[in-house]
Amino acid sequence: MPLTHRRRHQLRARLTGRLLAVCYGAGVDSTAMLVALKLAGLRPHIITFADLNAEKQLTLDHLDQMTRVLARWDWPSIILCRKKTLPGTGYDDLYGNCIANETLPSLAFGMKSCSIKWKQKPQDTGIKGARSGPNAGAPHPIWLEAQRTGQRIVKLIGYDCSPADIRRSRNLPEADADFDYEYPLQILGLARKDCVDIITEVLGPDHVPVKSACFFCPATKLWELFWLAAHQPDLLERALFLERNALTGRHSRFDEFQFGGPWDELVRNADRFPSSNTTVGLGRSFAWNQWARVNGVVDDNFRVKRSEADRARFLIMADRLRGDGNARDTRSLP
Image (cartoon, rainbow, N blue to C red; front, side, top):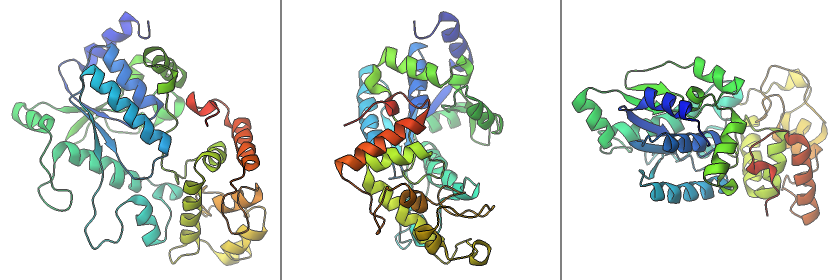
């Protein structure tokens, strides 16, 4: 059985009778969380996904796939929550925000304001509604029920039992003014491999998704850059442009005197940047543009190479560098 009787009882004991709001990320952990809830006989009241208009195509395909699964289960459909900006803002997503402000995502500087602004708050609005502004809308019935009965809504977050996710959950509050927070995978003691196994056994291996993240996320690993070059070179090119726009723009933190040359000159001619605490690119300590040039991923105009031989080379490099990743990430995709 994918979940033992004891584990199902643990989850039911913690969540039964509560107002459940799933924050769905469309990755392995949050998909395994949905499966675990189903096996435990727990039906969420709402499932939200923060739409940043920056996901890989395979993630969007997985969302469609899970929408069909939820329909078979007679569960609520996934609500896509996307932040709307004022008409005069000049952008309507995080990528446009970075381009307009000539900066990198805040995670590149060790902060998480982009996640709060573009992920957390839109999902909160999807639950609570908003009285005015571009995001005005009625509250979801779960919020009305909470207000009527005085119950607390429980946000379910898909953090597993890996050391990194345990650290994340411990650094977060158990509750805020509006929501309580629970981590079903940690209640069950499930690590990443367990999550892959439970999805595979219940839904099938084709339902194990790739990592869900923005195509320009500063937390991207080197193997994922090769993977992106092979599968969606257009997205990698957009990320490279964002980085150049930021590191040569008016808000650049790059100090030419410290590094011995302009950023774009070092990107084109040097193998690496001098060691520094200064963020030098989307990789924080390295620039994606420089990585792409040094590894032969791009041509002289920083266009991703698209020949079949280059694509095969990128896939080989991704496999060499990957280690233990998501199950679907380890397959050779067409």
